[in-house]
Image 1 (tube, rainbow, N blue to C red):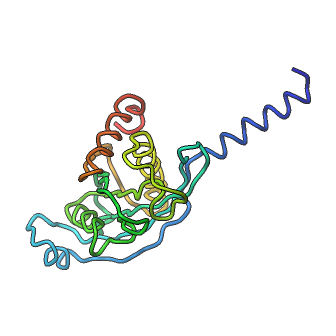
Image 2 (image 1 turned 180 degrees about the horizontal axis):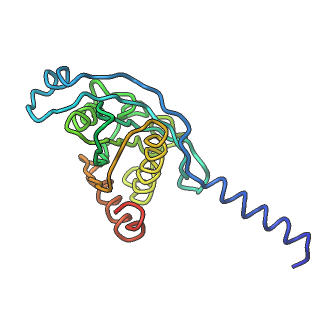
Image 3 (image 1 turned 45 degrees about the horizontal axis):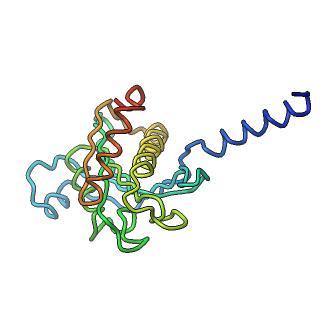
Length: 200
């Protein structure tokens, strides 16, 4: 390989690395709930905190390996002096791009994130590829993308936490409903097989 070829090969590899790198793009405060409001909403006596909830966008690969910007709901308990576990909630089957946690946080499954925030978890609810802010079509029950979109949201949430003084510990809980059960198992399997050093 001559010097010119080496030069282009180097920048090609650097370019690929940059394109596939995950990063937090934006975080928009959607609202806040006090402990009293969450107690009234859910009627569960174990709620100990109020919550702030955000729509975050972040980068992740699509199924072709091209960089996409996706969205999700991030819910943070309102006491900045506490250290919280993280919890990923994978939502059920969506009938439209807008039927996702980052949009339906008052009447849809996003409410689950508010509940978890009140219970003392930093809750992450990814919208999945092809839903919310993501382009294209949703690859239904596609285990690999269900896992990597959530993993990149965990990384984006870590960036958010560092920037906003949110303290989390090493505990990570994973759950979901309907399609989200499949997505939760896919995420757990991938972390256990490939990313236990990062997330466990």
